[in-house]
Length: 178
Image (cartoon, rainbow, N blue to C red):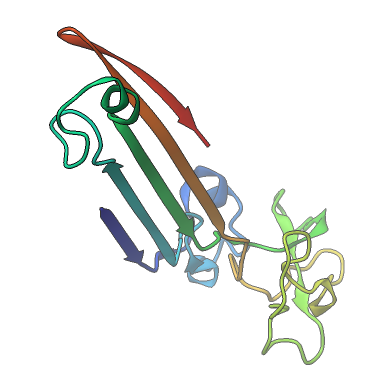
């Protein structure tokens, strides 16, 4: 068995080349301070491998023979990985036209600064409330910060079953994975 878990927070004022060119307030880089594009609050994995105790040299059917040959040499392995989502910046449908080609950031709708549009019952197709945001006037940047929302997390499960067939000093392995 093997397991790991990571709890982290990464903050900066521009993660890489793309965000460095999308600075909303070029005269005040601190205004872009927020979660890094690669910030992932929670991430973990658990893996296992188990050789079934049948066949020659094992606990059961150790004496060999055709049944031991058929039932021996089986293994199961698996990996489960899960992580929280990555942050993103909401932007309007227009380029700001503030002297650069920076996407126009949005404003919070009146009274929505506290909940920031975060949903308690988020789904894969609706993970924030669009009504919590409004477009600012043309030519102005909105007040919503950089990377203020977190996208959906990810989960992945891998499982395999394998059977080793001894062939003299070598072996043949059959493997199925899901």
